[in-house]
Every structure is written in structure tokens, then in C-alpha cells.
Image (cartoon, rainbow, N blue to C red):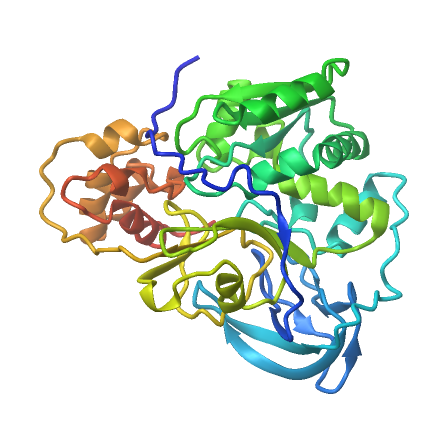
Length: 425
């Protein structure tokens, strides 16, 4: 099987042995109505309402969306406009916590006995992809195509992030239980738990746990980036190629993040929806790097203070990993469902860009075999036909091309802008 291109990065998994620490309950939370791909929710509560833990506070009739729940009990003090890190505007519900953490009467294990009831329960859980993309889980698990293979993405290939690794070490039974739950409800015959080779303890543990189950295959992935990208992990786990314009389901595969599958198992057992998030806090401005579990809606400022960040020294704050993460413009922004890491950097320098020297490094590292320099040229001339020929829509925005460019050109960013020129079907 041909090896896909990629890059070698320093792992910097400084927090891999850091047990998850529960953050103190904040005095207030701000919960956006859009923390996932798809339509934003509309608030179901108003100022003055009392809410409880696990209560649904936002929903929509749009099919491509998931509901939003409160992770605290307390009083709604405001319903405001909120601008996300992506620039979109949605509503946000602000709740002043009462410290009681009263559980809502809505929280009860769902009745799951077939695929239809399972998919309904998954939607009600508020689950979206916890690897960072935020794709609604109930949509992913309900394709029209016949699925024969479930891939559990446990690569976590970005530097610094160890949130998924701690899920593997701390909650292995939930992961195996979630895999078996999804397989049985969807009628999938085979599951592949794909783990990057730099996590030997997890590989050893799951190999032992699955030794008597021939429906779960533990796959060791090479330690290279972007090993966790959907098309890459599908190819490296099964040898199947997801072609341009196809979804993984078209090749008989579903890929689900390891923290997502563990959450689904816990939800079916307890009925508690997605209201907290484990995230890695690291970077050279962090006094105490660690993995924390925070209530969704907690401000990044409180997370940073809990981890002894040198607030005045931070030059760059990144939500997610250094390769595909988003710059955080305001420390008062909240932890959301897709938050898996917060990196506080104090020695960040913007590199100057120069002319392309035609070295070809970007081509040699692209896992999709694209030609970023040519895409850059076609974008500047707005040559849509050439962009189609160059297969720009295959770009997964992994950032490998930008990382290796000696001219410091923003090739990955240009690729994303070029995609907007292609008419969507």
C-alpha cells in the first residue's frame, strides 16, 4: 500500500501523563447557540429563568444541527449576540451559577432499542465531533449508504494535544463500550481503533482488551502528521480511497473521534448530555500545563488563570493545535463543544513572506498530492477551471505546505480561499 505524504513534527506531548483535573465551577457561563457545523440553535430560555444541569436551553428544527444544554444550575441573566471565532454571529445564553448543580428532570437514560431510537438519542445528547470539526454526530451515524467498517480516530497527531490520549488512559471501558454500542445499533461488522504509534501504552491496553473480540482491530498508525485527517486515516486503516466529491460513507466507512464514541456510551447509560469538555492547556506561557475538564461556557480567562498562565506575556492564544487551531481574539470567549486544547504562547513572531522559489517542498509533503504553489497562482488570477483541474477541493487544510515553505507563504490559507471560488453543487 502506497505511503501518503506528510511531515514529522515534534510531539511536545508534555501533558500525556497529566491526569484530568476538574475545574472549579465558574460564577457564570456564556453558552453560544452555535458550537457545531450547521444551523445555530435558538434559545429556549429567557432572562430570569432558572435552569438546571443537563437542561436543554437551545434547539432548532433544522436537521443539520444539534441542541445545546446547560452544564450549570442557576439563573439566566442575559441572552446576547455572540461572535464566534469563525466570525459568525449567533445568540448566547449567560447563566449565573447558584453553586448547587441541581440535575434537570430532563436527564434520564434514553430508551435505545434500535437504530432509529439510537439516532434520535444521539441528536438529543447534543453530540458533535469532539476532534475539533464539530460535525453533528447523528448525521454522521445515519448515512444512506451501507457501512461495513467503523474507524475510531485515536491519532491525535497535532503537537501538544493530549485530551484524547487521556480519554484512552482514563476511560478505556467507555471507549470499548461505545464502539460496541455503535456497531450493534448500526449493524456494522468491523471496527478499527486507529492509534498513532507514539501512544504505546494505549496500544498495549486496547490490544489486550480486544484480544478475544475479532470485530475490533487495533491499528497502529505511523507517527506523522496529518495522520488523524479523515481521508488519511481511512486510507492507512483500510486501504480505501475517498475520492473527490465523495463522503467516507461512499466507501463503506464511518470515522468517529475516540472521545465522541466514549461520550455516547456514557450518555446512553446516564442521560447526561454534552455539557463539559476535556481540554489540554499548554504552551510556554503556561505555568502549570495540564488537562482540565471544564463546564462548557467557562471563559478561557478562567481556564488560563487555573493553569497559572502569564497573562501579560501571551502573544498568541490558540484554540486547538498549532497546525489547524484557531487564533482566539478574546480571552473572555468560552470553552465550547469543539474545544480540545488551549495553547498560550509568549514567543510568537510573524515571519515575513517572500517570493516562491519553486523548491517543490509543498508538493512533496501534501498527503493529497496537490500542488499548492500552482493553486496559489490560479487563485490570484481567479482561474476557476484551473483550480478544478488542480483538485483544490481535496485540500484538508492540514497546513503542511505552509509549515515547510521556506518563503513563509500562507499556502494553506490560500487553498481555503480558493475553495470559495468553486461553485457548490
